[in-house]
Figure 1 (cartoon, rainbow, N blue to C red):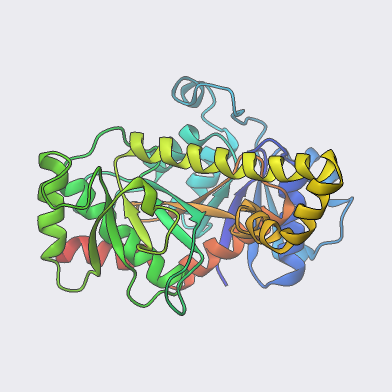
Figure 2: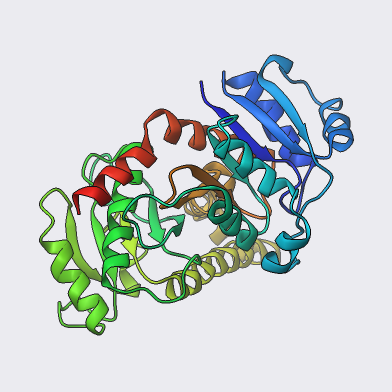
Length: 337
């Protein structure tokens, strides 16, 4: 079984919920986890929950990067911050992948500092998964969107490489045999979106083993038209935050409506199954996290508000990706390109 280095100090609920998640994973799986962070705090949190000590190790470091700190400046000052040390353990062969719920910028920079980028890859991409409708049997209820923040602007080659990375990840982790890949654009026509997108469309259409379905628009994101959606980081980040915000608003409105009067309560009761399904789909704890792709090693970035269940599931995703050789598949796809 792989060893996963877990940033114990990263996230809004760290270290308590992170340690709890690792403890749960130690009881439910054979995955070995190395908790990276302040040993005293980690051990105190472990003492409050049941766990299997055979599956948990601790690597001590006092420093960590908070969610509000500037990642570039802080990483220069805190060279032994927990997320950096976790990445270093992987680069030195002491672990196989990293899980962190901490500062996103620091996570991406830690990868850049300690991991080699895949040969031939131009840039790495931060991916995210989000819930949507499904349109065919076996389709994963979660779509993969990349990039959502590691880049600002991308050229044609980078968009094409992101498509290959996302397709390889979806095949192995989501178990979709032939993931549908699409470009997020301002129209479905091949000529829309400027030179980078037009040329990316042309090149992706010509890759024989890629299931490229063309351009999709924003109103298609919640549908099952594509399993992997490719875009620049600036656009992807805006889309991701919009989807998260809409999901929270809908769930909040449902809760408010239920409390208003008997008519609202009756309506809520009649739609309870639908609201329950929406709540389940938008529960980030169910899928744990999403990858930073393009490096020779893998980091899974969990939501900043991750609880123990989310951390446990992120560990499972990381272990699955390691076992299935996702980074090797990505490297092979880039080499073929």
